[in-house]
Length: 470
Image 1 (cartoon, rainbow, N blue to C red):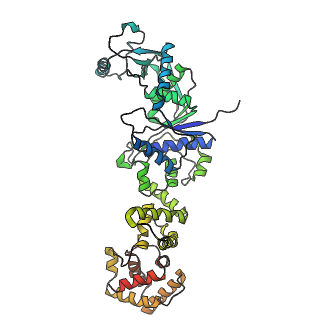
Image 2: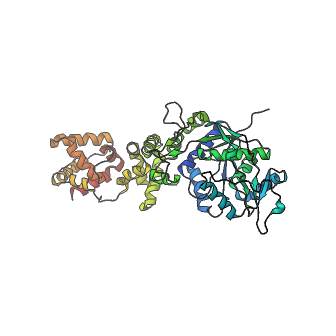
Image 3: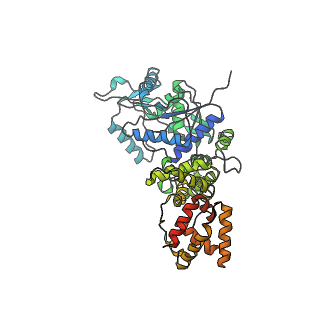
């Protein structure tokens, strides 16, 4: 008999954006499926109609697409399958594995208060478990509850956490159908995972107790349970649960911050999974190497500085043309209008130097602004200080020294500037620093001869003339 095909799923609730924890869960499921040559399914758990929004659904699709996590087949929406979920609950009632509970909201509240007063965990007391439905009070619509075992243990042989044993006395008879007939999360998830052939459920370890309840439901329905793998949650640098103050934003925020998708995948991969001492891991390597035995049990710590360090590596390794497109898009979005071919050529010439200095594509774009700014350049405070009277006079003389050059290459301009500094009897910095200010409007930039090459002869001479005339 052939080995069963691996099928994993990512099942977000569309009540907000795709956050970092969800993105990592999606990545681990995607990698596990791709590693084993299986299927990766996207299911939108939109049963909470009051909180589910189209904007959140779009954000999930956009975030997954940006991360490069492609799913197999069409995305599945949970809400339209409600009748199928309810059908499973009614079957359990018919088989005496579930029952109608006629408790009023007031009775349930009283149960919870009594348990708290006695120092117990609030749980349903089973009062309708073996009671004749003919005793039902008039006007009360019943919920359907699972008739859970009252003794013994439920064992989840978790692929990350090891064997997790929960005493069945801790698990009450959970609601499967609410009094209004709508299925609960627990029921919907189990039915959908079964119907979709999910073999491995990989999710955060805040679902560990849910796994025990779901195993009971699988047993009652006579279905094999999938293998569970509960991965530790992501914490902030201080060890506390990850929150917005730590950087727990939607993935679209990291895209806006200038993080590359490949860098995000690499960083999320290393949050809770390792392969020796490897830090930089390509997607191809990740697919080849990823398995659940590399997932640790300790919470991972989110570190923005580390993310930016990984991103800087991917920027340095990226194709220049792709980065030029990214910068042009950002500059156009910022209101610079559609760049012309001259701007593209300048960016292409400068990119090998520019990308060595940037941690994000936002920083890369900011560092490239001098290439698109129109003359006369606005000067920042430090640049303006460099252009004193002596410097302006020297720039006027440098303009005359550079003007005869027709072969405008970094080597030719460097030789001319160095010869000029020798003729002026000053160190190179005395020429290069005011020249940098004149050409970029800043006191820092890529190598000055790379800047001159990217700007080209006419623009360079024009900017030097502008600065000399100030």
